[in-house]
Every structure is written in C-alpha cells, then in structure tokens.
Length: 413
Image (cartoon, rainbow, N blue to C red):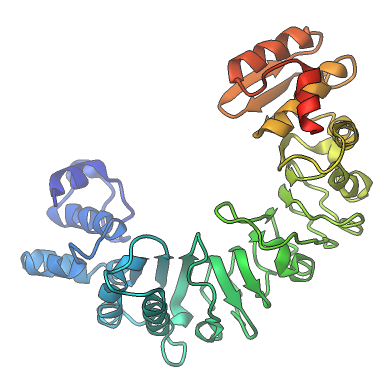
C-alpha cells in the first residue's frame, strides 16, 4: 500500500484531541489520516490487523481509533474472512462504540460454494453483528444490506432484527424479507430505505426525515406517523423487474415534506387525504395517463408551488397516445410555476416536447423554464419560437427521430 499519496491527499475526520492545522501535522496526525482512509477502502488482502505489526506507534494509533474496529464493509466473496474476524474486531474497541455495517450481496462467490453456503455464511455474520442477546445491535449506527439481484432475499432473517437499536440512524436494504417483530425500537432512525422484498413489517418511522419504500410494502400504513419527513420515495427496484404490478395509496400528512417521488400503481383515488403543503420537488414514474388523475384531484397537493418536476413514462402506454396526452397535458398546466422540468426516456421526452410545441401559446409563457433531457439542458423563454427551439433540441439530443405523425403512429402500434 502506498501511504504517501493517502496521507497527502486525504482530509479525514479526526478525534477531537487532534489539531486541525495541516501545516503543523504531527506524525500521529498523519497516522490517523492514513488509518481512517485505509478502513474506508479495506479488503481482506490487506486486513487492518496487519497495521498493528508495523511498529509501536502504528499499533497505538490504530488501537486509539475505535472506528477502525467498528466499521464493517463486506462483499459476498469475503464472507469467510469476515465471519472469522468480527468478534475479534469488536473486542478491540470500547463496548459503547457505535457500529457501521455495509454488506454488498453481489459479485463472484468462492469456488465450490453454493448459494445456500453463502446464505448460511450470511446468517452467521448477521448473528455476530447482532449478538446473542442484541448487545451489538444496540450499538448499530448504520446498517446497509444491498442485494441488487435478490439472490439471498428468499430467507426470513427477521430474527437478527428483533432487538432495540436506540442509536440506529440509517437503515437500507434491497432484496429483503421482514416479519414482526422487526426493528422494534428505532428512536434515532433518520433514513430508511426498503426496496424489493417481502416487507410484512416496517419499523416506526416517526423520527425519519428521508424514506424510500416499495409500493408492495403497504406504505400508507407505515407513513401515518412519519410527520417529520422531508423526502419520500415510493419506488420500484432499479435493478430488478417487479414480480407483479402493485397498487398503493397514500393518505398521510407530511407538513415538512419538500421532495416526493411516486411510481406506477397509484390507485384512482390513491391520494385522497394526502397532504404535503411544503412540497417543492416532484418526480413521477408512471405507465398510464390516468395515473396523473390522483395528483390533479388531491386537495393537499400544491401543484402550483412546485419548482422542480421530473417526468418518467415507462413502457409503451396501454392506451391510445391521444388519451395518454390528455392526462399529461392537464398535469403540465397544473405545474405552471415550475422552473425546472426534467425528462429521461423516449416516451416522456416525445410527449412533453409535443405538448410544449402544440401548447406554445399557453404553457410556461410567463416565466423561463429550464428543460433537462439526459445530459442536455435548454432554457425555454417567454415568447421564444418553440418550434425552432424544440427542433434544435430534438436534433441535439438525438432522442426523437421522424415527424410527429410517424412517431405517434409508432406509439399507437
């Protein structure tokens, strides 16, 4: 490991007793920087224990840095290594040191090991990270288990999450199954992310400010007490197709919510009773023009106050394009004060640009709007020649080819 670039290039957090003047760094200061950077990029090829063997000063610096022994960044192909060192590492730091866990369940497996073997190792690791009576779980500050392809989410592992976690601030899982009791006490939880799995039970979200939920997890019930939310996403997996089309509704009140993402499956009256008076940013990922109706009819949805809007339309619409356009047209008129409009996919780009051209006399004519399409950005100013601007944008982005008639004939099948 080349230590000099690390020591020179890293500005890391240090214990309070260390001076912050880089001009007068002592060797111990540099060691703390090196060790903290090392733990963030550690691999079993260079276990952190080897740092203890360099010299006495290195040993003392490492032992004086509890975070070095309470941070666990694991990948599935390293599970054998981690199972054998978790208890030893936890023994090197005070028993009140908070624990940070990040597990990535993707990548190559050890040769000769089956998925069941890996799953058993995963269980062993979770048992060590929780402790027989939850003594380690009570020290969790963050927990992430990322299974992007749902290879190991088939088994119920709720038994490792039945203990109080009074210091847990961040919990993120993808490809997971939960059954009660699950995270029964989370008074410090601020960020909660649970996507793609069987979420039969969710924790108390009353202290959270940032939540991402799968539409299949009954978000309506889970969000009833989440009055402190600033950001909310109802979202599908980005790496896996849903096993079935979920339908959901929201009827909770979130006075501080500023950012909201809604995915497909929103019921006809799915936002009845929903209230988000402080909302500034809205993102939608819909499959049908009818899915705009719940937003348009919701009295607690301040569409006229939105500043940033992102529109994503999935798959060919299951209706004639003209019907799809009707819902989108009403939505664009309702967000008349937006200053940023972002588009991502062929369908949303096509339909929004078509409407901006057709409705050029009425849509966004009292102020400028920044239109973002992938990596491209253009400003639509009041009075500009929309046809010319949009044609230039189509040419620049390369997202839409042919005449509008040809494009919509293709969309209608």
